[in-house]
Image (cartoon, rainbow, N blue to C red; front, side, top):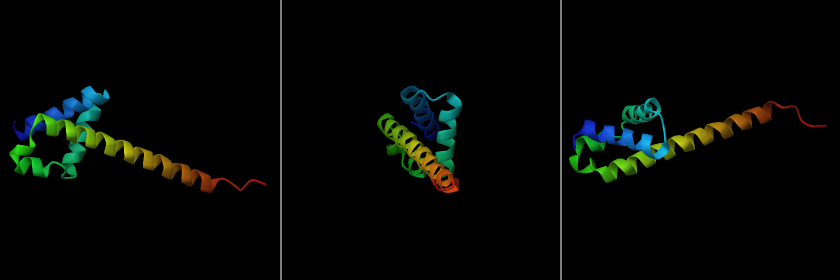
Length: 87
């Protein structure tokens, strides 16, 4: 498949597997492109398979979830530091 078809497949899988709306799935793929996640896929056509698309969709989604969890924990720590000590 072409590079563009591969990215479409990853986007479709994010929508189907994780029930992301189209805009969220597209944003995840575009952000990954901006971070040069797909550079190898562009250079190596053998990486553009349906199996690899599924692997990449899962990896992108899990990375996003981990980032969200880390941000939540950081916010909780900041909020705890702002609270006055209990008497």
